[in-house]
Length: 278
Image 1 (cartoon, helix red, strand yellow):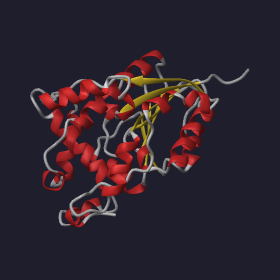
Image 2 (cartoon, rainbow, N blue to C red):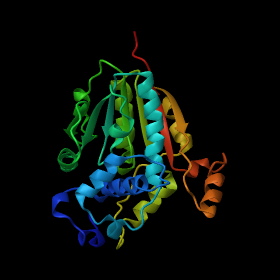
Image 3 (spheres, rainbow, N blue to C red):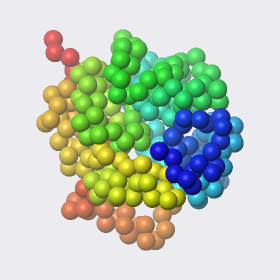
Image 4 (cartoon, helix red, strand yellow):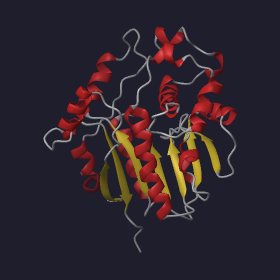
């Protein structure tokens, strides 16, 4: 539900779209527009301009974290599609992400899955692409799997999505992907339990546009996913790139790399799915 703070900046052409995709687009576009930005993303800059949304008034100063997360995803996904040319990327909850234009190798097929309102805006504001399909469907409606070309490798990407689901929904989706796309991969980011509790406690407060985030997964629990689901062969924690942290942030970042504290971190995990049984 939108906050009063967000409603006063409501744009008619964005009816029905939640604030989170706009927030991440704003942050990526702002970072890409910097001379010292860590992310190259001209498409995000153009898309953000076309939406004409007063993001600074709604979200405040841009944050670098979303661009660093996108860069972490890009690096891993670029490597995987390079190892499996001509495969398919399924981007769940694609929002206003422009990952295809950042990592396109000239062969990859891309299926963007999101809710109808977001897909309508993607089709209106993003350029056409010969290997892109947009599918207006919830990621939890597993019928989207029937739309995936499984003749080649499948890489499922879920950026900024799973934490919005209930735990059984998020884990059920991971399990379903592992069983439906044997030999494939899945990359997703996840929040630590302490942050999930914080968002649920603060949801609905005046000026807070973020909803509570029910699903959390620690670094330790993400590493144990192959033990929980037989369709998962391995789980790898990906190191996020270093940005432009202030001195206090450098101290916090270094501390969170200590084994005793790493379960407090925001993380990105890459899963490799087991091969199909003969």
